[in-house]
Image (cartoon, rainbow, N blue to C red; front, side, top):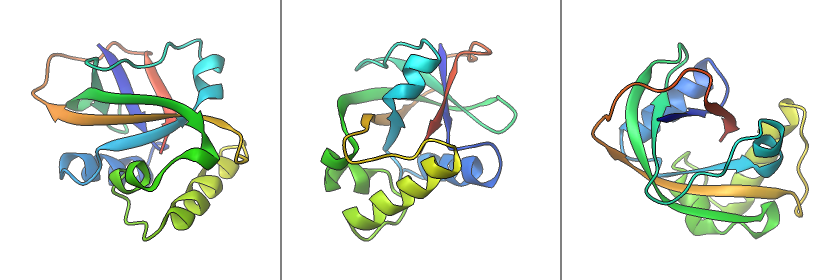
Length: 138
């Protein structure tokens, strides 16, 4: 089972995982360039991933329910709201994600390719395989 690392290690990952575990976060967005850099294949509908904490331990299993490859500027409000991070508008979501990726050293433009994932929590199906995690999703 591959693993999903949300955000960056520390408080952000703890917060994002809490949103997932509380049922508020059912989507995430990643940069396509990160998949290319890590030579990692895209997730697929029905795939199960271990959601991992700051120490790489599985805290839940999630099942991918949707995968969309689009540009940053084309991400819609339905997906942004499903990320569950409290953004009041699409503009606020975009500004927050731009800040996050800029801090990570990858500024994004409206035409930057992104991967939008939708997921649900499922009963744990076993431990994650070490070293098979993607980041940073936000």
